Each structure stands twice: as structure tokens, then as C-alpha cells.
Amino acid sequence: MSRLVLSSTLACLCACGGVAQKRRTFPVEVTHAAPAAANDSGWAVTLTKATAKVAPVRFFTGKVLLSSRWEFDPYLLIGGTAWAHPGHYLQGDALGELLTPKDLDLLAATPTELGLAEAVTGDYGSMQLTLDTVQLAGTATKDSVTVKFDTGAFTPPAPIEGVRFEKILEDEKGTARLTALTSVWLSRIDFSTAGTPNADGVSVFSSDSVAFNGFVRGVLDTSAYDVKWVAP
Image 1: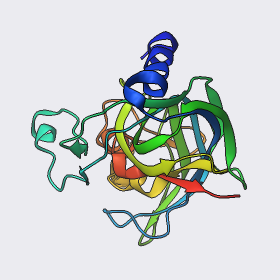
Image 2: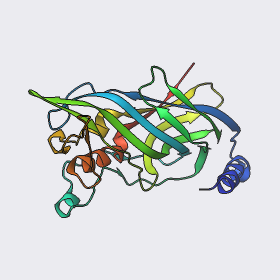
Image 3: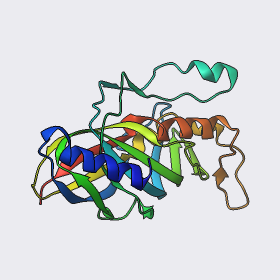
Image 4: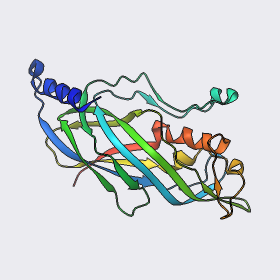
């Protein structure tokens, strides 16, 4: 949705049908939650790098009725990529957006502010997230085996739709904080398929590898993103 279209939508929300909505702004920030347990294949992961480029971020009225991981990925049987998605999700009306892209170090000690979302008051239900060049690196250990890995960069082919964010937003101060749950990004990776280490001892995932496919499915999983309103 372009800025022009959203601006028209916001104007309509503010003026049409007697809806008492007001324009406002609020900050949006990003942080991450490190893996606290072994992943689905039993690998304990320590990250040394977690980067992403984020923008735009958009907010909608539509609520997410179901958002969960698939236990079975049928497309893998034919070599495709499958991921979890919200069920029965309709985007609804646009309530806000932040368009300026920003490169993020997700391992930063404190949350990174993306900027101010141009928005209106209302009943928020979900967020749409555009990610670019997501990449992780670190070590994965299972039993006596340790793998130094680099996922390589992945750019989702489309915005991630239906990230849950439920908040009736009026004039209160606060921040929309997006937490990237890197444990979900890593959850489907079997590091035994990471490939042959390079001269530096690092296994860089090839784009056609099972390991990279697991990484892709984790990034595209809506349960990997937790959005909360944080009061000052």
C-alpha cells in the first residue's frame, strides 16, 4: 500500500461515518529474544550475529484468529518451502505505517528504534512486517558436535502478514515493541545438514540446502514475531 493510499484511508477513518478517530504518531522499536533451549533437532545455538533490514511496517484493524506452526510441511515432499500462517485472517483497515527502512543489529543490548509510525487512534489487531536481508551466524552444539554456521542472507519474497498486535490505542504514550524470536527462526534447522565448512571453519548455508530451507520457514513463521505496547 502506497503512502498516498494509506493517507487517504487514514483521512477517511478520521472523517467518514462519524468515526471519532484522531491522527497520532508512536515510536516503533525492535529487539530480539535469544534461544533459551535446544531447537527441534536438539541443537543448542549461540548467536554471534543477527542482522535484518526492516521497513515498511504497517498496522491494521484485522485480528489474527489463529497463528501457529505447522507440524507437517507437505511441500517439503516435493522440494518446496512451507511455513506457518494465520488462519482466517483479513487485513481490515489500515491504521498506521512506518516506511523508513533501517538496518538492525538484533544482538544490540537495547531495543533499536525504527522511527515514528504515522497513525490514527483505533482498535489495532495486526501488523504487517517487511524484512530484508535477514542473516544469522553463530555456533550450534549437539552432543559432542559443534558447528560454526552462517545462514547466509534471506529476503522474504513478500511482507509477512498477520503478525498479532491487539491494542485499543487512544492518546496514551508508549511504544510498539517488536521482538524477533530468533529461537523460532532457528527451530527447524538441522545443523548436521549445514554443509562442508569453508577455510574459516564456517558452514555457510547454500540456498538449496535443507538447512537453509529450515531457516526460511522459521523467518516466515508469524509466531516468530511478538508485538507489544510498552508504556513509558
